[in-house]
Image (cartoon, rainbow, N blue to C red; front, top):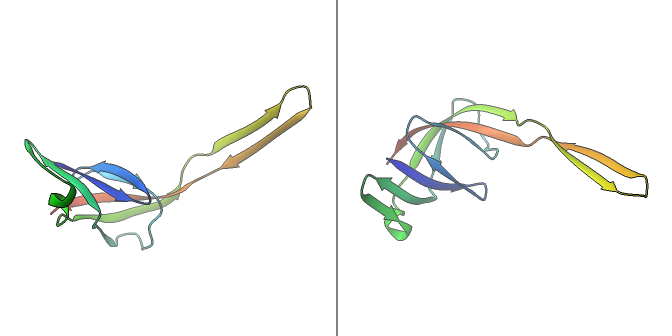
Amino acid sequence: MYAVIETGGKQYRVTPGEAVQIETLPGEIGAQVEFNRVLAVIDGDNVKAGSAAEGAVVRGTITEHDRDKKTLVFKFKRKKQYKRTIGHRQNFTRVQINEIA
């Protein structure tokens, strides 16, 4: 059984017992989180999507707040002696999925 949820403008496929890394959520470590924006619930051959999955809720626990590894952005214009390097680290929250109801 798995579900497709939307949070932070992105869609994630989640299963119970899985830890998923998503956009930063407010809340302390150990706090319970509910995802009400469930796009689809798939249980074997039984598929609920769209308006049929509106009542579904995915519950999880916040396990970690951290920053991802650094991504380097390198700008370069040939023959002009122009080089710029910029780094970026994205914040994220790791959530342990408990149940799909």
